[in-house]
Length: 305
Image (cartoon, rainbow, N blue to C red; front, side):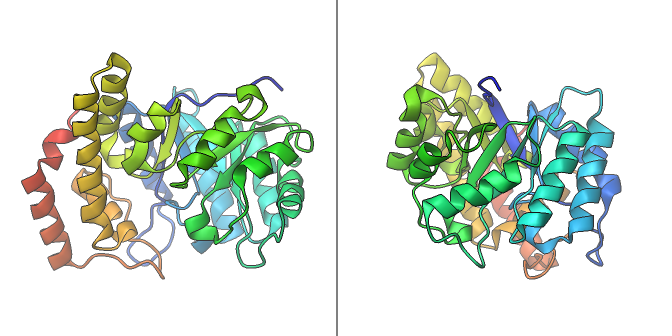
């Protein structure tokens, strides 16, 4: 398999729910259209932002099926996250993604019974990747959620010959030393899209060409301007745009990120519904206060394409 590189923005999409918590797959078409209108080239479905750990296997299969229905024939590319505590479920989702026509699959490590060594992590991911041998496979490094303290560069080094379709790592970690090690390993063989929206500029300075982020769903124009300013060599403008991201993420995180992010989507006309428990939704007063803060910081002007 040739080298696979993700370029530009990949939105880690929300899973849409009705008020009662059931899937609302009718909204996926609007999500896809919104991303394309915002200049996003890829959708990363069923990941952390997609609340995958709160979905059943059949719900995840239905979600993937719907995304490919609405994006067929469009320019929007779909990456499917298939990670699960059950490697059998992960493998089933990977096989489905290949059948549906995904451009790649990605999987985080099991996080209840955690791999105790890099070798075990490699063996686990090899099992999942082998279920979709025709697709590029990205290991999903997100230690804040999995609790894994294993070296991602160590994983790549050991997995290089073990996983034939290994493309790289979806790197959602603030460890920029490890990020550099991953990018330089095996003469830059691997693709390492970056996953911390509020640190994108730092990753660009270290060579990132692609990024996967949740706030790209509702603030893609900000990040496109970060990238554009960086490519022009205008670091002052790039820093100003990146600071907008920092202020936005800070406002959302202070209220509970998942519920606040979904509330922002509704403000932009894409009703993805509430998060599923145990993530909490914002109540009416919290939503009003968030809108007021966003208006004051200029968010709704920032995101005009």
